[in-house]
Image (cartoon, rainbow, N blue to C red; front, top):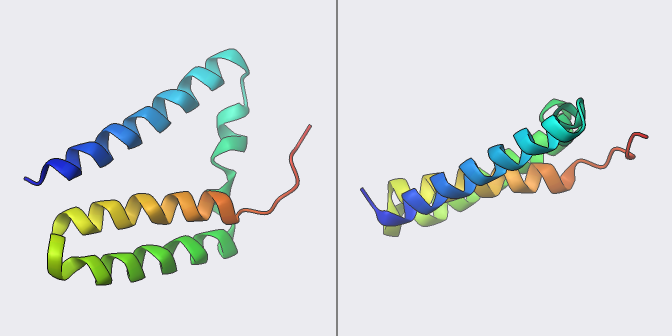
Length: 87
């Protein structure tokens, strides 16, 4: 296994732990934090980024490129979610 895949796993674990800690401190915050997963335009942007990055990196890095592309796709979807913050 490529060591960079482990880096992706650590980053994903850190994001999940961050969400869990925030949820413990303020119930309901995890739902707001991950609300981008229900936004069709954000998911489309994330999927597009993931497919393009995965396709470009496949020849050189194989499965590591797929792992990084998936992480990038999630982050793009998170950023692309343009809903106003709830109070």
